[in-house]
Image 1: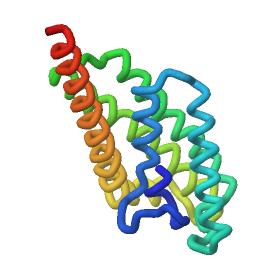
Image 2: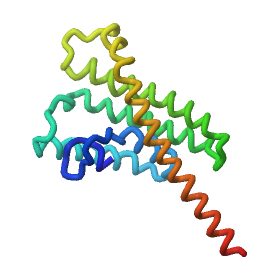
Image 3: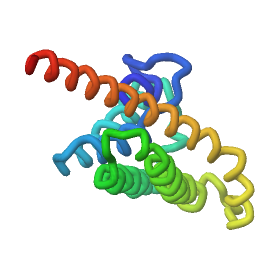
Length: 172
């Protein structure tokens, strides 16, 4: 998240934000609940740093910004739900995909809907106007989320494989 969010000192150019994936993966893989507010504070500080450094405008900073807490909460919760279903087998990949899809829809509606209706940036906001934006912006959000989560679970699977081989080697 630090490398992909905003335009601050640690940004890697041209990578889409990993924030959604970080919240989902943290919910799925990390147990302490205090990490959720810690990650939200980190994401907010990164946004404020980017603004203070003049690397982004205040376009996204509005009263609607707090909808992000709810959207990230949905992603975290989706990760928690998936964690209960996860087994270290390929058979759980479809459940991961379905959980990720459902969670991303909720997060998108909260995050983007919150911004569209509550930011004041769209004075003529309507349901029709919001719905027509979904096919333009949601696929990219879903693709980015799925890509990072897929990469995250690929790293997780590789780590588990290495761990099991080391255990098997130590037992031999």
